[in-house]
Image 1: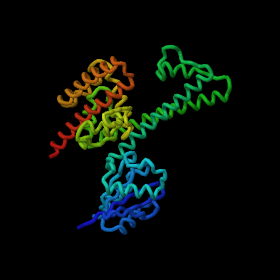
Image 2: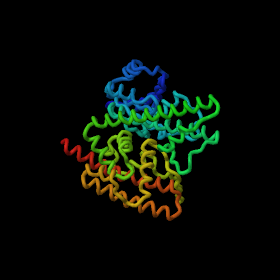
Image 3: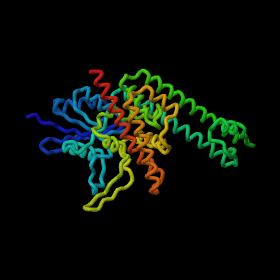
Image 4: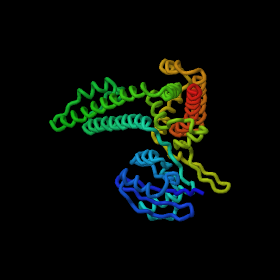
Length: 373
């Protein structure tokens, strides 16, 4: 009978702590080694035949380089969710060696939850989308610096002037300060805003070019999801790059739980207590879905832009999107009438919106697989 050895790796930028859980029950700490490809290869060779090894490590800043190396060596490897690794309430000692032992034991017991690992092309597009998201955050911070700088010196935009509109920019350019040091500060802040805007535009152009050359099934899902109200091209691209194939979720509820837009719960006996959303899983998806859900505050409507996006999808997808508008708008009205805060209401809408996203994506992915076969 072939025995399997479960290997836990606590991976850091420069070091890796290693532990092995034997099928007999023994768990051995193998120490700490350098985080280098040749060191990993030598370790796996010492541990035995590749068909006997099962390796896991936590998702983190080191990415999936070790995963792809081990898969290339023919070794079964899983990247697990750090937030779902079991911990003992009374354990107050945490070291790399202990973490590796804990991973190996939990992996042998089947108590770890693996995460989805994108392929190289998918990860490259996701990196580009996240770079654009980081650029937008930097742009927002740069704008806030200007606003706070002006406010400290008593400069306020004219009434009715929308922030960072053309009229707002004309006002910003007319503001002057009496001291050269303040003028130098103003010019530097404005140049930083201009630089951030150019950076965002450059990244968005790169995203469009990559999507145009992406495989047809991927582009089909991106186009179909945009049939939903509130989901613009960049939102759809973010969803697809962060979630991958949505058919891997057997039910829409699994997708909701994966993104952390479900209520936390503490139930004991007959007492049931539900709290705020769990916020586990992918924060990027959670952000864009909540932003999209704000569009369902308004009555169902097909504007020119949405009508144009729906023209290229099949009637069944348009039907799901129209059903989403009616369902979520009625849900918004019902919850607001009960006195719920608008943020909580929109979060509830985002949870249900994920169900419609899942239904459309799974339909399109299934059709693409059938067509390919």
